[in-house]
Amino acid sequence: MEGQEPENDQTRLKRLLEAVAQTRDPAAFEELYKHIYPRLRSHMRRLAKDFVIADELAQEVMLAVWRKAEQYDPARGQVSTWVFRIARNLYIDSLRRRMPELDENDPAFVPQEEIAADRAIINAQDAQALTTALGSLKDEHLEVLRLSYFEEMPHSAISSLLGIPLGTVKSRIRMACEKLRWALQQSR
Image 1: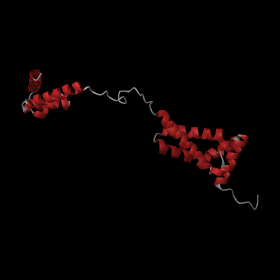
Image 2: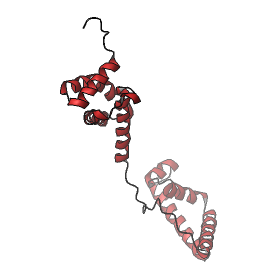
Image 3: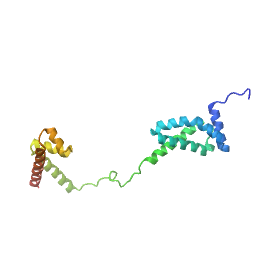
C-alpha cells in the first residue's frame, strides 16, 4: 500500500467497529477491545471508586459495544465518544439499581398527624411542669441526671468525671428522680 497515509486512531476504530457491526468479526472486536478497554476501565474506576464494580461495568460496556455496534453513527461523534456514552449510561443505571427502594409508608416519610389543640395544651403544660421541677433540683442532682440521661454516660464514668463514689452517683440519680416524680404529681 504505497502512497497511502497511515491510518489514524479514529479511522482505525471506526473501521474496527464497522467490522464488528457488519460481520461480528471477533478479531476486529479484540483489537477494538485492546485499544479501548484500558482507558475505559480506568475511567470507570475513577467514577465508581470500587474496583470490582468498575471492572464489571467496563466489561458490561464492552459487551454492549459488541451487541450494539450497528447502532454507532459516525455522523454523531467518534467511536470513543460513543463507547464512553454507553459507559456513562451503564454507570448511572448501576447507581439506580444500588439505590434502595423508597418505602412511602416509612415513618420518616409520613408526615406527623397534627396534634389536637387540647393535647397541645396538655403537652405544653407538662413541659412547663417538667422545666419547673428540674429547676427545683439541686445542682448536684441536676448534673448527674444530665450526664446519665442526656449524655448517656454510664454511672462509673460519671463517678470518675465528678470524682465521687459510684454509690453517691446512684443515690443522687435516685433522689433526683424521686423529687421530680413528687414535683410532677403536685403540679397535676
